[in-house]
Amino acid sequence: MRYFIHLSYNGANYHGWQIQPNASSIQQTMENALGLLLHQEINIVGCGRTDTGVHASSFYAHFETDNVFSSEQLKNLVFKLNSFLPNDIQIFSIFPVSDDLHARFSATSRTYKYFLTVDKKPFKNDFIHRIFYYPDLDMMNAACEILKTYEDFTSFSKLHTQTATNNCEILHAEWKWEDDFVGKQLVFTITANRFLRNMVRSITGTILDVGRGKLSLEGFKEVIESKNRCNAGTSLPAKALFLTHIEYPFDDDVLSKEIE
Image 1 (spheres, rainbow, N blue to C red):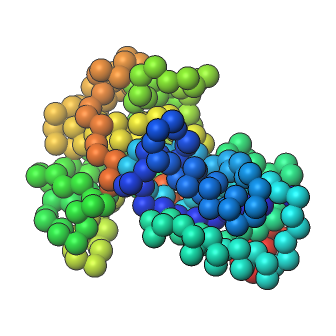
Image 2 (cartoon, one colour):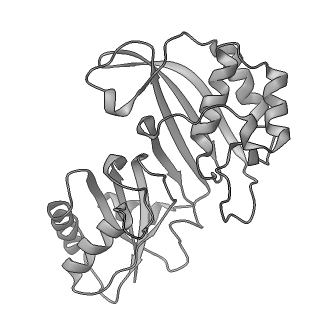
């Protein structure tokens, strides 16, 4: 049986999602807890590989087991997992899916949000990046429209990765001011079919250069077309980046199982 896990996590204390030697990861922490509860070795496959320090307010993973759980047993498993896991990982639900539904490869899009502020925010310092100028949102959103016309994002990828291709399809990109409980924050939202390592943070930093007048729109195009990471802007801190949504071809039957 294949089961999906819907969860969230604060990535500050982890070296990303994926298991790494001699480093803490969300995946390893999850596998240890679930294996202990089910009394068997469990391999968990995540919907993506968030970088060190990056958070996820919505994340999906799957695992397989010979156990067939009832709805009540799954609710109890969620309760026990949340008791076993550290406070920076939360399980929302566990639900059965068909064997051909894969947490990573079946996802059709992923959405990230990056949070910035111009003002001091003492209650949100761990989750927001402060800048010391008011950027031009019209120019930055114009850069977003340019971004969507390209597919090769080598200029925004971490060097020497083992990806087969640096091509991605940007489905949505937008900057806007939003209200939060302590004032306004600047939010960059970006959705794509896939992302490269460090891609969102380097895109965010480069578009901010457009917003503060350091880079023209034509210059932004040249950065993308150069396919050279050295030409892009500064990669912003991981603490303000959240994976917020994963799109799947779920049907109503699958969704009803999660809601239960």
